[in-house]
Length: 102
Image (cartoon, rainbow, N blue to C red; front, side, top):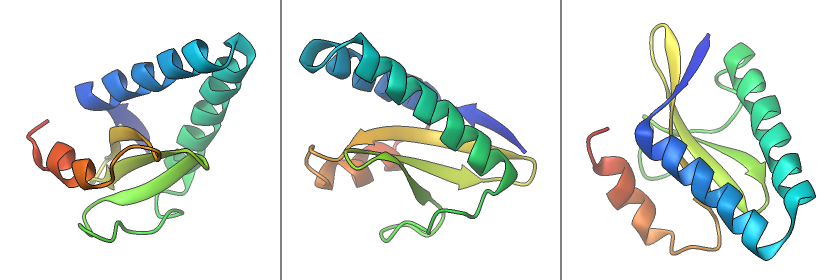
């Protein structure tokens, strides 16, 4: 299946990379990018590999790293990635972000 990203996913992905570059270094940011590519390929071939989200079963919550999750939905012909989430943030914000129209 094809994996597409919403504008919020693209923005949150870039924010995570910026954070890694600011706090860590280029190597860590590159490792993150490679891990995202690997996980996107994985969900493309096995969309149900990650569990349904606890607050909305229409979403699935995947993991890039212990500190970064992502939220996606499986549609008829594609997988839509909605958000990359730094797990150190306030988890109450996730519902609000995902409830906005994309």
